[in-house]
Length: 215
View 1 (tube, rainbow, N blue to C red):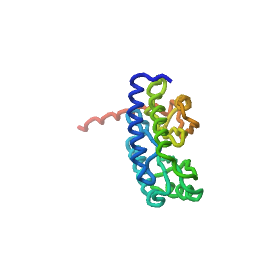
View 2 (cartoon, one colour; view 1 turned 180 degrees about the horizontal axis):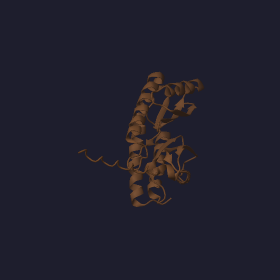
View 3 (cartoon, rainbow, N blue to C red; view 1 turned 30 degrees about the vertical axis):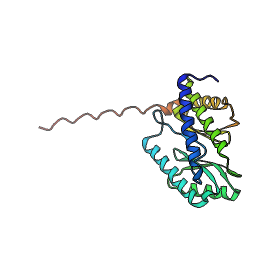
View 4 (spheres, rainbow, N blue to C red; view 1 turned 90 degrees about the vertical axis):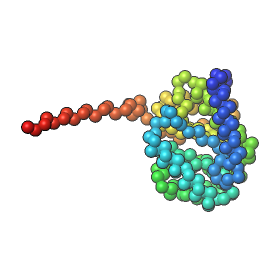
């Protein structure tokens, strides 16, 4: 795949940041490894919803770390209070326990549990996942028909997860881009699909005419 200079630079910057996060997070039992890239300029969530998602991620990660310690590698990504759990835990029972913990976090609306009962991934695997995330985001920037900032991208063991509030056309195009990246084995869409009409801002409320002053 060919990248523009801008996209290549972005890919490098994202990869460096993502790999640093993956490597730096290895000492922490829960947070780190897979990479979730957030949105800024074209995020369709309200500012309040973005803050709520950040708080959900922090509360869930803290609770999981206190429960599992260094026995597990779990990543939490929240979008509009829908939480994606990825990573590895020792047993199926641990997977269900993690689901219960996250489901009980204040503000969580629903949970998609993609944990695997298996040994934690190696640093080389996490670095590879970070690079895939960077390439997906850079390819979205390079594309002229999709806004990359609409999506959160998480990669775990060569599976790419897409989160966001998007139209069906945007979802299909982002999926196509992710599938085109070398090393991607699967794309999972954890998306909120909306129509073009739902994205239009509501019409302005007509001003109430001022009452004439009483004489």
